Image (cartoon, rainbow, N blue to C red; front, top):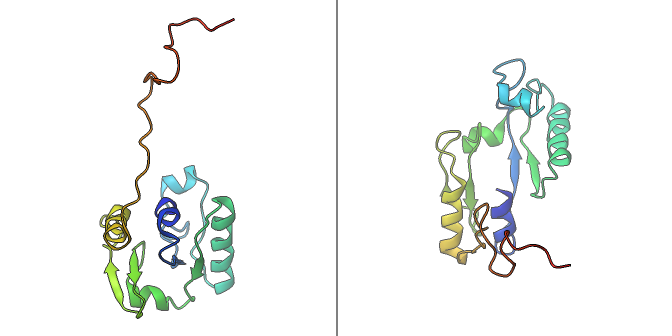
Length: 146
């Protein structure tokens, strides 16, 4: 998502909204959360939810504006956002794009395609494959100059 944000932030405003914890320690903890050291109990107060969101923003240097759903989950209920979902809201406040519900139908490439159709595609240089010879440098078998 961060790359999509970087590519289109001059054309659109982005907002991440933190809703319910997807894999809390007191409900449905996953091994990947333990491995990544992102283990939280399901927040019971807005202050707890804010603390978890702040931890995420700081630990991962997340550059996208961050909103936090209220503890009654109003945004989640309106947008069916849990555990993850992408939306584009147009200038008139209407939903212009509704992505699939995560985790199985969450597809950032689909929203990238939508943004590209609207604002133009952003191309990135494809990195060379590992062990590829760079034509601007000498082959690996050439001894270094002395």
